[in-house]
Length: 172
Image: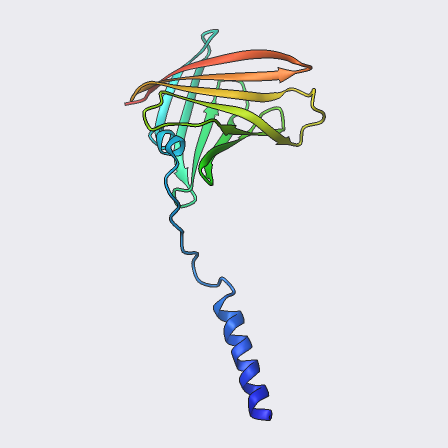
């Protein structure tokens, strides 16, 4: 009986240590998501202008072992903002870490490999004071060609929308 109890304790310890995640995580391979594959083509540095002529710089980098794309937006005299794009099952999601101190999440509609445009629509947000509080509500990314994109951001506040457009070129 004592031997059986000792064996049970030893097996429990082995199971605990073996399954505790002490080893590096092994990435699983999910089927590719067309929208995410298209967004990954943006990796690098981009420069351009807003609709009113203000300069803007955007950088894209793959992070977390290639499972997410990080976008960093910079404009003179304004706080930098970060957006993370990532697959969620067979769809594409994004979370925008806004200078307005909220974090809207958006989901892209269906994206085919040949699509030139990806449209993200508001799902929800963290740290949003009320549904009427100002937040990014929509993003359209249009791929003009390999080195030129247009971003159209829609800001919603108190039921009214304002659109900001960035026209960008890949820095060579």
